[in-house]
Structures are given as C-alpha cells and as structure tokens.
Image (cartoon, rainbow, N blue to C red; front, side):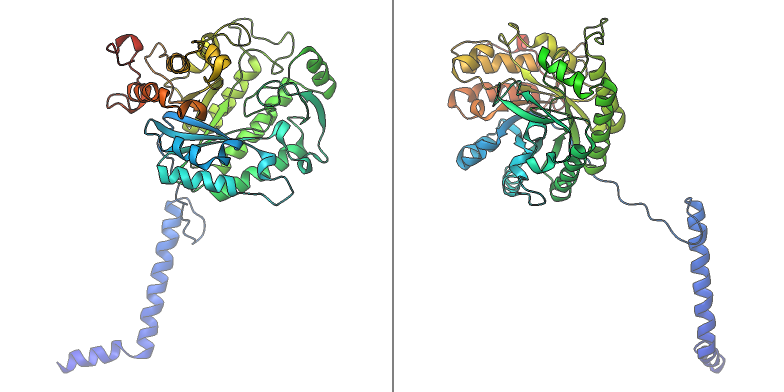
Amino acid sequence: MDRVNASMRQYLHPKSALVVLATLLFALAFSAQTFAKQTGGGGSTVKVQPIAPTLGFQPNGLVVVLKTHDLKDTTSWHKALDNPSISGVALQIHWADIEPFTDTPDWSKLDALFAAAQKSKKWVHLLMFPGFFTPAWAERGAKTDTFQIQYGPGQGQSGILPMPWDSTYLTNWLTFVKEVSDRYGSSPAFRLVAVAGPTSVSDEATLPKNSEDLKKWENDGYTPSKYVAAWKKVLEAYAEDFPSQYVSLSVGQGVDILDLPGQRNSTDGGSQTRLAIVNAAMTRLGRRFAIQMSDVHAGPGSNGSTSQTADQFIIGYNGRAVTGFQMGGSMEGAVGSRKGGAAGDPPRALQKSIELATEPNSAGRIVNYVEIYEADVLPLENQKVLSNEALLCFLGPSTPHGLCVPPATVPPGHH
C-alpha cells in the first residue's frame, strides 16, 4: 500500500504532471497532423468540410400564380394558398417594386408571402423580373435602348431596356439577387427560383423581336455569343447564391432575337442560341436545373394555334430534368376561355389546358408542376377540375413523381 501511495505522490508531483501534459499535447498534435495528411490537408491543421446545403424534394403539383397587385387582397391570395389542390405558389414581382431606391429594399411583400406559404405548407417559386422593370437607379451608367413591351401588362407601351449583357446592369442585378438569397435562402418554403437578368418583360429568355427591334439590336451590338455569355454569368451567380433551391429557366416559344436571321437551326426548327443557354444551365446546375415554358393554351393563341407543338420542347425533358408549365393567362372571360380552348366555358378551358400541359412523353413522364393564375384557382366552378387534375397527376398514391393517368383511361364522370 505504501508503494502505491508513493507512486501516486510521484505521479501527482508538479514536474511529473508537466511531463504528462506535454506528452498528451504532442500526441494530439501528431494525430491531427496525421489526420490532415490522410484527408488531403496540409501541415498540422485539421480541415473540416462545411456541411452541404440541403436540397428539398423536387417542385411538384399544381401551383397558384400571383402577381404583385394580387397581394393587395390578402383574403383572396391566402384563400388560394389554402386550396387543398394547390401544392405551391409562384410570385411574379418586379425588381423596381422591391428596390425602387438604392440600397433601400422593401421586403414586406416577400416577407408576407414566405410567411403565408410556410404556414400553409406550400412551396414557393420566386420569379423576379428585371429588364423593363429595372429601377431607374440601377440603369445609371448602363447602356440602354427604348423598345415596346412585347406582351403581358403594358403590351405596346415604350420602355427602357438595359442591354442584357451590360456589366453595370448585371452587377447591380446580381447584387440584389444576393440580398434576396441572404434573406430567404434558408426558408423551408423556398423551393424554386427563376433565373433572370438577360431578359426583358419577364423571366423568359425572350427579347423584343419585330423588324424595327432587330435593327436596334444590331446597332446596339447584339450577338448570340454575347447573349449566351451573359446567361452563363447569371447562371453561375444563381448556382452560388441558391445552393438549397432548384433554379428554373423559362424559355420562350419559337425563334426571336435569340437567333438573328440565318442562325436558325434548320434541322429541327429550334433555336441554336436557346439550346446553348439550356445546355449551359443543365451543366452548371445539374439536378437543381428546372426548365419551363410559360404560355400553355389549348385554344388559338396569337399565331392561331394551340401551344401543343411548342410545348414539346419542354415535354422532351420530362424525366431528365425538373420540368414545368405556366398557363398563358387566365381562362376567365371570353378571351381567356377562347385561348384556353373552350370559349365561354372557363372550367372546360382550364381542364383542356391542364391536360395539354400534362401530356406524357414517349417514356410516359409528365411535367413536375403546372402553374395556374389566381383568377382560375379561386372560382367555385373550377374546384372539381383542380381537385381531379391534382389527384390524377400529382397527388395520387401511384403518381408521386408526375406519372399522370392519361385522360382516356379516367372513368366517366371523373375527368
């Protein structure tokens, strides 16, 4: 026992304790150096890899589309979000409506949307429009020109449009985009963001294209390679700023300024420049890439026909990427229902247009999501159409990833 006590006293002697402590520190340092070498680190520093951002499930289902002015009627848009047939909400909002003055953004509209979406357990698709809707302060020092707004609200009116490739314009825009990411990027409701910048009237990759516009673009120095380079720049920024979101690219229909005369792909009638942008997006974003078109209509459009032919560009990507469609407008009223394919019958027009959007490709796959304007989500007469289409295509137990039941196989009275 005395020998044990003596040993303990020796172990607890201050000099002995220092020796033991030094030995432990050396061992820890050696272990850290070894671990760093094994993991590719240099010196004796242990490199800890950051936790990868979490990417949620793919955007899916029927989605209600809201415009900025819709947010004024809180009761109505909250009702649309609470609709059980609706899985998500897409907000179209102008950059100038959020940040009309330098460094003084008004986040109130977006704050309200994200809070309501999270409460309703709906996912968010955020579509912010620069282009014609760039605040005046962000255009200072940027090269601009005047064009007529080619479609949508304000169609035919003249507006100032920054050159899509202008570095001052893109720098201001991407600085704002980063602020949006910092504020909302961690929201569990934020599932999808629309890439924009080299755009004009919306998030679509389209520019004014009539004969007078083409002359202006040539004088302004437009080239497809310059345009594609601008898209690659914004794609890189969105990929970095939104690591937890899917990123949607909205492609326009047909040929426009994307390809100047003589540049159209005569083999398949498609746009070479558009394909270059899509390929760049797929390469940079990988599984986060979403592609959509925003003009589905089962009746005659401006060209006198349905959107079925143009829709095939998106349908061809079903199963290979996240895909989506947005209606070409509301089905309400005589004009809307006619464009939807059933003049005077909005519910039928809505049904026909959703069926067109959910047409399967050769592999039997349909789009992940279909976006419908609030004016078509609220009416009581449309609820049966919405519930049936949601159940058949998106919410049914056998169709969690968009394996829609073809309309022809639906029992009578159910479609």
